[in-house]
Length: 283
Image (tube, rainbow, N blue to C red; front, side, top):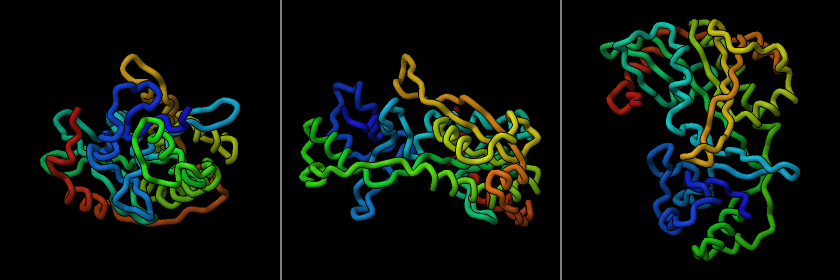
């Protein structure tokens, strides 16, 4: 059985009538509604397409390795609307990607706007597991098993992949440590969206006991999603747990000190410049 569970957004184990050759040719990501952005470094025109892998020896678990996989049904954005404390009926909701702030860039902003002016916003960071080694041979073997010629010697390689739990977790926490003081100073929220199995690892390896069951007054929130089977889909994400803390709490996870400074108006201006019909959140 292939360790690739989702390929270009399609479940591999249950789909019997898929033209995988056409799927590979189109290279379309259903979550971005555009060409997949995860490409080979050696061949940037070729999308890898692996969304979710089956990982583990004792109890193999579906593990998401592409952050865009978390965009399914745009549920993560509706799950953050309650953090827009200044949002009112009649305001428009926008999703604005990639805004830079001190400490780095933020993947998405959920924005409440009225008449083209920002009323409130929430920063949203997506994080899935990075892999060690390469998933490419497993991908190619899956395609060969589906009757799709690959003309690729990599499919015969015995190389395996792993999950880079420690480095991914540490990098994630350091990035939060750099960014959350900005949001706390402005009285806004930053949300880390991740898979529940990744949160479980972070709990075991870092100091997480001081984090609260989500409180709206805290600036830093963590939304953990599980993968569940439904009548419509074998792999659907569902919000399972919410935690929260503040700048000191994030620093406590790593034993670091946080410092940064930013003016609220700078971020508001960046967001307003990107508001358009294309960024509207439609349900």
